[in-house]
Length: 153
Length: 194
Image 1: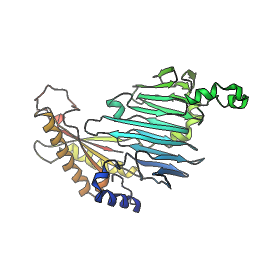
Image 2: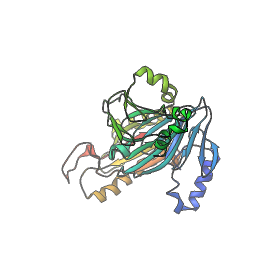
Image 3: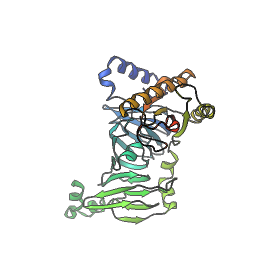
Image 4: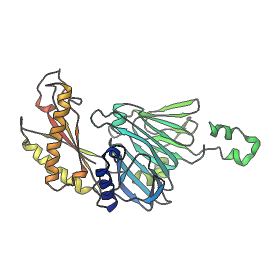
């Protein structure tokens, strides 16, 4: 566990990782919740739960903000994303080798607004970061940008 | 492609057709360091590279005009939720020792101030070597140095789970040298608070 959170859930996951080292790699956190306002939920392995500042996020998480809410996340490659109100983002794929800085970061903005700053994955390999919206595919060569998706294709 | 089919089905009625007027938008922001690698937006066969401040495109990957005021209006609350950017410090050590150089001790203390600014933080301790020895040896050496510096932080009370040790070996030289060149400025540890 990389987070500084003292939430019991964090210890529970750490415990599970400790007794199941084979599964540990796939279950490594890929980022941490840094900012939050209002109500933010994560769908993980079919279960919906609220998230708080300090919580880890994982590959395949789907993050949803309620109307009037927002959330900011910093990832393992120092890339950053923030989601505006009434938005939904799926963290489809994240792989990162911190020694070589090779990796892949694919996510989908299903609806709402997203601000992105690319990190070491894109610095090492331009366009190794993709963001899908229902209508378009974005290939990131390294920059800070914002995206709005209205949920229609 | 399913989306295209839906858009090409006006026979189904005007209501559906109206639904095809997507509100999607991508806007590149000015970069603090002035360098913009850009974003490629693709929709079907349309493709556009946005690589200037406020360069923007709609869902059809065609350029649209957007200014700072529009961005603030549409994305204000999203931008307000951005995390504090990661901040980095470089520490140097006396040759063949774990003892920090004098200025590095001050930087070491600054790390704790930076952590205190943040509601939730992790620190990444990245070891770098010069080009003496093989790349493989330097990977191991840089990770060992990173781990020993990580201990300085956990000894000061940081949760071990929040301190991440990384060895970059000789991949990221601060001073470019040929192979097998001893260079103290390349033998360093970078601390990133994020």
